[in-house]
Length: 328
Image: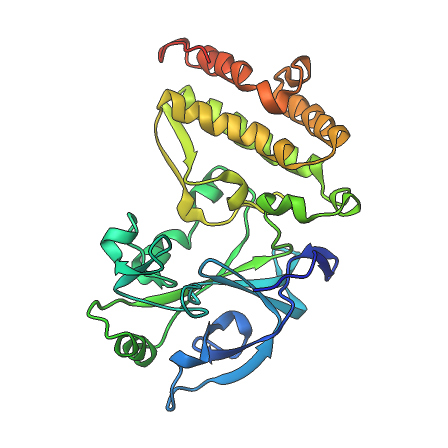
C-alpha cells in the first residue's frame, strides 16, 4: 500500500493511497454508500446484487476509508469520509477475511484464531454480537467523549458469508457485519510525523486540549467514586488529529486500579504533546489544559515528560489517600 503525503479533502487533511483499487459494493439497507457493504470482489459471486467500482481509498487494519464527493451531514456537521469496519485485513492477500485462523506475522502463516488473537476476533471482519456492543458507543456518550459518529450497522448477506467460509474451507459459523462511521480526517495522532510544519499549524490544539481536559476531569470525578476509565492499546492510535476518538470497543470503565488510572491520566495529558513537533504549540496546549483542569501544568519543566507526579498527587487528593501513594 503506497501513500501520498497528507492532502486535503473537503477542507480537511487526510491520508489516501496512491493507486485506486477495485472493490464491490453490496446495497443491503438502501442504495446509499452508508447503507451498503464493501468487500473485495473475490467474495461476491453471481446471484448477489452488487456493483464493482474503482476508488482511491485508505486501508488500516480491518477498516477502509471511502472518500465522498458530497459529504453526509450528522447533527449539523459534514463528514466527507465513510469508514467501513470489517472489510477484511491485509495478510498474504489484500482485504482477506478468515473466519477460523489468525495471521501470525512472525511465522508468516495462519494459526488457529484462539491461539493467534487473545480477543478471539475473526480476521479482517466484525461479528454481529461484538458490533452490537460497539455500535451504541455508550461510554463515549455517557462521558461526552468526542468521537467519530456511528452511522450504520450493516449485515453482510448470508450467501456472502457462506461463500467466504467455503473459499477458505472454514468450519466456524459467524454472522458478519460492517460498522460505518463518519470522519472528517482519517489521520490519527500516531501519524503526526507525516504532517509538514504548515499542516501542523492547522490542527486545532485548543479543541484537543478541551477534550483532553474533559477526560482528565472525568477520570478524577470517577476516582472519587472508586471508578475509572481505561483505553486498550495506544491512545494515539485510537484518536484522530481533530480530537475525535474511534473504536468504542477499546474503552471501558471499571473499579479503580491505581496504576491503571495513573497510566490513563498520563497518556491523555501527554500523548498529543509527545506527537507534536512544535515546542511553542506544546506550551499552548498546556496553557489550555491548565485553564480547563485547574492543574498547574505550566509550573512543570517540560510537562509532556514529567506531569505524572502532578497527576498522581491530584489522584491521591481526590481519593483522600484511600488507594495509597506511590513514587515514580
